[in-house]
Length: 164
Image (tube, rainbow, N blue to C red):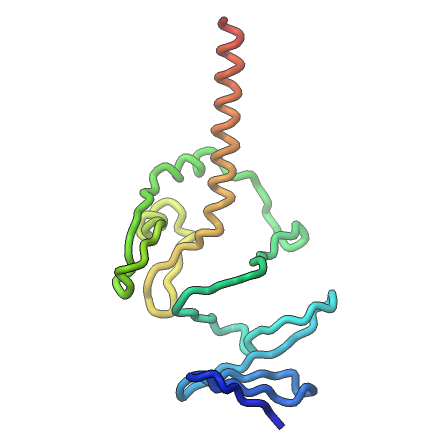
């Protein structure tokens, strides 16, 4: 026996507990999500086909945290970010804008075409053909630039003290 949601516009089905599958049916198509138990015992929900991107065409509200794998055991070819690469951050223009499909909501960001010129690895085309920016990958660049700037400030303070 399965349970059907009573929420308008949602045709979710929950199979029997032993099947470990929940199916969300939206419109004529559908997407199957599976509950998995991770090695640490945590139960997660994931698309049954993890080779297909998940598209959310509205706000994503997360009341928990978002984690990206960052364990050193998962990484190869680890090097410091070069100072020259950091200087490229200042070539990016920050903008305020509205999306054409929602003129009421104000957004802050950068233009993918500008980012692509200096950090092409942070720009990809989405499934609709539009360019996207991996904003999370900009954070380590900004952090490294801040550290670099602080080193310059500390050096200037030291020189100033020595010359007084």
